Image (tube, rainbow, N blue to C red):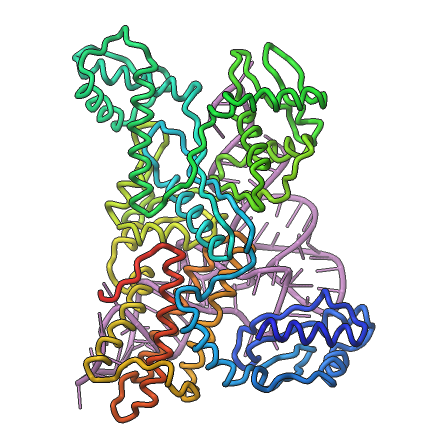
Length: 543
RNA sequence: GCUCCGGUAGCUCAGCUGGAUAGAGCAUCAGAUUUCUAAUCUGAGGGUCAUAGGUUCGAGUCCUAUCCGGAGUACCA
């Protein structure tokens, strides 16, 4: 319908010699204003220097619309044109959905294109925290949406296992190890105090009991890295997140990519030395201060490998690159993007999704957390407490740019107040009806169902809501905002529950109507299930 | 100081590129079940969309200024 109207109206605008780029179609908030509406007459009023009502009338005058799609239209003050879809069109969509099944909602925008989503990217210095969790689910859901839009998606995890932080981790592990041997120790300054390192130390002790203070720090470092990475990967698996590529920062050094960036920037005269460090003239690129790329110790700061990494991303030829990270890294990306720019590289296809922080609430109180100290809640603990489905839903139910209040009490409640169960119940409820229908001898026969019978108020509302699914996914894809999907699915579940309350599906005295309603529910269930698949949340048949 | 995010119902938040009478959940109050799962549904109350200007046919949405909350502003990542 949207495509049809767009085509027809554009053609008519061209015929009249009026601009076509202002054409917009939207779904009116209220059903009485039709199924689709355009404000084109008002948008053109200034250019054409005419009254919107007149424009609307002239536009619609000679426009012939297929009555199988558009039932009628109305022109309303101050100049809205409202279109009402025909009943045939509406019910025909049910058959479409039943034909498309598992593919309903898939788009072709990204066909033939590749996308990379980089997310999590936590260095292996400790278990994932609830903060990482938000990014994890956000990135993974975004990747799912892009993939439903036709993109070939690469999920990537970038990490660094060299440098100061990892050395500190090795030293912290060594201290814990020696502590187990009964030596009195002090953790290194700024070291890792988390209890998990004691567990890692025990594991190391079990494998290699004879290490001493003399043992190379590298041994501790690599043992810590391997152990912690396996902890991280198992957390990710528990919420169904699997990365395609783990990109090691070190490979950039080994391939000379770090030096290449320095050479290019030097050639452009954007570097200088001061106090033994190498500085990047970011002030010349419009920033407030210059930034250090190589410390006086000879070690690069995180910015330099970040630039080199993004240069590689560009070289790898993705059509779309999405970086997901937390608000605490907000300062990093403008430098990286402008570095790409001055190097003459493509950068417009790189999109950055930044999410704000997560606050855990328990009994209405904020759960205090501080990173790097022992005192944080891990993603694993959260999954233990509320389960994977709830974790996935709660993390993305709000827009990424808002702070997220994660209410543990609500999340744990297995009742109507919990949106996850509300949604899953809608799916299970349909399954239950199917089981019941079968018992009563009403076989599902959607092919022969008379869909014209689907014309009551709440039925039509449910049908319309269902048809929005592809539009919602497309909206998510365009805006790179995923929270529209859970909120849509919630509305769809509401429409289903209302329908259920209002009408009886299985009615042996009206087998034709029952068949039509069963066909409708089949389509609704397909839609719910597909939506839950994108969110990677279970769609139970029974609760 | 500067940069970024937010400020919408008692609470938590939606509101797509500016559109028609600003929505949902929770909480409060009042109802619905001899019925396909009440993990559901119906109804009511509740708003100067932080504040003040501006842009225009029209602003919660765009611009400017101010106030409040959060994040960042390292030779940490």
